[in-house]
Amino acid sequence: MAGRASHTSSSAPASAAALPPAFPFSIPGFDLAAACDRLGGNAGLLIDLLRTFAMEHHSCAADVETLLQQEHPATAAAALHRMKSAARIIGAQALAAAADSLETDIRHGRSVDTTAFAAMLADVVDSIGKHAVIAPPAARPANGTDANSS
Image 1 (tube, rainbow, N blue to C red):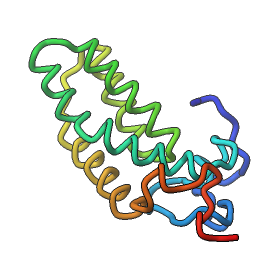
Image 2: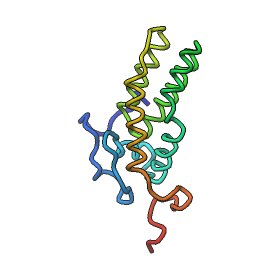
Image 3: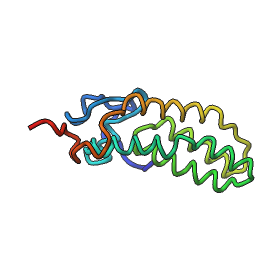
Image 4: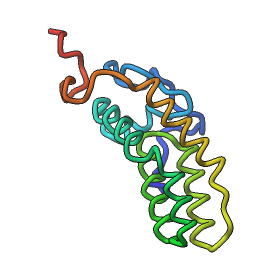
Protein backbone atom coordinates (compact mmCIF):
# COMPACT_ATOMS: atom_id res chain seq x y z
CA MET A 1 0.00 0.00 0.00
CA ALA A 2 3.04 2.24 0.05
CA GLY A 3 2.31 3.53 -3.46
CA ARG A 4 -1.29 4.47 -2.72
CA ALA A 5 -2.12 8.07 -3.56
CA SER A 6 -3.40 10.27 -0.76
CA HIS A 7 -6.78 11.96 -1.04
CA THR A 8 -5.35 15.10 0.58
CA SER A 9 -2.40 17.25 -0.29
CA SER A 10 -1.41 17.66 3.34
CA SER A 11 0.78 15.18 5.16
CA ALA A 12 -1.15 15.87 8.37
CA PRO A 13 -3.60 13.21 9.51
CA ALA A 14 -7.19 13.72 8.43
CA SER A 15 -9.41 15.12 11.15
CA ALA A 16 -11.70 12.93 13.17
CA ALA A 17 -14.56 14.94 11.65
CA ALA A 18 -13.95 13.09 8.38
CA LEU A 19 -14.89 9.78 10.02
CA PRO A 20 -18.39 8.40 9.55
CA PRO A 21 -20.91 9.62 12.15
CA ALA A 22 -21.06 6.13 13.71
CA PHE A 23 -17.32 6.13 14.37
CA PRO A 24 -17.13 6.37 18.17
CA PHE A 25 -13.56 7.46 18.93
CA SER A 26 -10.18 8.74 17.86
CA ILE A 27 -6.76 7.47 18.88
CA PRO A 28 -3.83 9.88 19.23
CA GLY A 29 -1.10 9.06 16.72
CA PHE A 30 -3.40 7.14 14.38
CA ASP A 31 -4.85 8.31 11.08
CA LEU A 32 -8.19 6.63 11.62
CA ALA A 33 -9.96 8.65 8.92
CA ALA A 34 -7.59 7.30 6.27
CA ALA A 35 -7.78 3.81 7.76
CA CYS A 36 -11.57 3.87 7.68
CA ASP A 37 -11.46 5.18 4.11
CA ARG A 38 -9.21 2.25 3.10
CA LEU A 39 -11.87 -0.07 4.51
CA GLY A 40 -14.67 1.49 2.47
CA GLY A 41 -15.95 3.51 5.42
CA ASN A 42 -16.62 0.41 7.51
CA ALA A 43 -15.93 1.71 11.02
CA GLY A 44 -17.05 -1.56 12.60
CA LEU A 45 -14.44 -3.46 10.60
CA LEU A 46 -11.77 -0.94 11.64
CA ILE A 47 -12.67 -1.43 15.30
CA ASP A 48 -12.40 -5.18 14.86
CA LEU A 49 -9.03 -4.80 13.09
CA LEU A 50 -7.70 -2.55 15.87
CA ARG A 51 -8.59 -5.16 18.48
CA THR A 52 -7.18 -7.95 16.33
CA PHE A 53 -3.96 -5.98 15.81
CA ALA A 54 -3.50 -5.56 19.55
CA MET A 55 -4.17 -9.24 20.23
CA GLU A 56 -2.06 -10.65 17.39
CA HIS A 57 0.88 -8.25 17.29
CA HIS A 58 1.39 -7.14 20.92
CA SER A 59 4.39 -9.44 21.29
CA CYS A 60 5.96 -8.78 17.88
CA ALA A 61 9.01 -6.96 19.28
CA ALA A 62 9.77 -9.74 21.78
CA ASP A 63 9.15 -12.37 19.09
CA VAL A 64 11.54 -10.61 16.70
CA GLU A 65 14.18 -10.34 19.42
CA THR A 66 13.86 -14.06 20.18
CA LEU A 67 14.03 -15.00 16.50
CA LEU A 68 17.17 -12.90 16.06
CA GLN A 69 18.79 -14.51 19.12
CA GLN A 70 17.94 -17.91 17.64
CA GLU A 71 19.55 -16.79 14.35
CA HIS A 72 16.34 -16.78 12.31
CA PRO A 73 16.58 -13.34 10.66
CA ALA A 74 14.34 -14.19 7.69
CA THR A 75 11.53 -15.26 10.03
CA ALA A 76 12.05 -12.13 12.14
CA ALA A 77 11.87 -9.93 9.03
CA ALA A 78 8.71 -11.73 7.88
CA ALA A 79 7.06 -11.12 11.27
CA LEU A 80 7.92 -7.42 11.01
CA HIS A 81 6.58 -7.33 7.46
CA ARG A 82 3.21 -8.76 8.56
CA MET A 83 2.99 -6.38 11.52
CA LYS A 84 3.99 -3.42 9.30
CA SER A 85 1.20 -4.18 6.84
CA ALA A 86 -1.37 -4.51 9.63
CA ALA A 87 -0.17 -1.25 11.23
CA ARG A 88 -0.63 0.59 7.93
CA ILE A 89 -4.15 -0.74 7.54
CA ILE A 90 -5.21 0.49 11.01
CA GLY A 91 -3.58 3.91 10.55
CA ALA A 92 -0.54 3.45 12.83
CA GLN A 93 1.84 4.92 10.24
CA ALA A 94 4.74 5.75 12.59
CA LEU A 95 4.78 2.18 13.89
CA ALA A 96 4.66 0.85 10.33
CA ALA A 97 7.65 3.04 9.41
CA ALA A 98 9.61 1.80 12.44
CA ALA A 99 8.84 -1.82 11.53
CA ASP A 100 9.87 -1.16 7.93
CA SER A 101 13.20 0.26 9.07
CA LEU A 102 13.89 -2.75 11.31
CA GLU A 103 12.84 -5.17 8.59
CA THR A 104 15.17 -3.51 6.08
CA ASP A 105 18.09 -3.60 8.51
CA ILE A 106 17.51 -7.27 9.28
CA ARG A 107 17.17 -8.21 5.61
CA HIS A 108 20.47 -6.43 4.88
CA GLY A 109 22.27 -8.18 7.74
CA ARG A 110 22.73 -5.05 9.82
CA SER A 111 22.76 -5.15 13.60
CA VAL A 112 19.47 -3.99 15.12
CA ASP A 113 18.21 -2.80 18.47
CA THR A 114 14.48 -3.44 18.99
CA THR A 115 14.19 -1.29 22.13
CA ALA A 116 12.62 1.80 20.53
CA PHE A 117 10.37 -0.34 18.34
CA ALA A 118 9.23 -2.35 21.36
CA ALA A 119 8.33 0.85 23.24
CA MET A 120 6.45 2.25 20.23
CA LEU A 121 4.54 -1.02 19.78
CA ALA A 122 3.64 -1.09 23.48
CA ASP A 123 2.33 2.49 23.21
CA VAL A 124 0.21 1.60 20.16
CA VAL A 125 -1.26 -1.48 21.83
CA ASP A 126 -1.92 0.53 25.00
CA SER A 127 -3.62 3.30 22.99
CA ILE A 128 -5.83 0.76 21.24
CA GLY A 129 -6.77 -0.68 24.63
CA LYS A 130 -7.63 2.74 26.04
CA HIS A 131 -9.50 4.12 23.05
CA ALA A 132 -11.01 1.17 21.20
CA VAL A 133 -12.51 -0.67 24.12
CA ILE A 134 -16.15 -0.74 23.23
CA ALA A 135 -18.70 -3.51 22.87
CA PRO A 136 -17.22 -6.81 21.69
CA PRO A 137 -17.59 -7.43 17.93
CA ALA A 138 -20.42 -9.95 18.41
CA ALA A 139 -22.48 -7.36 20.32
CA ARG A 140 -22.24 -4.75 17.55
CA PRO A 141 -24.22 -4.81 14.31
CA ALA A 142 -22.06 -5.08 11.18
CA ASN A 143 -22.67 -1.43 10.25
CA GLY A 144 -21.17 -0.20 13.55
CA THR A 145 -24.34 1.54 14.75
CA ASP A 146 -25.83 1.18 18.20
CA ALA A 147 -27.96 -1.96 18.45
CA ASN A 148 -30.42 -0.11 20.71
CA SER A 149 -31.19 2.68 18.25
CA SER A 150 -34.33 2.50 16.11
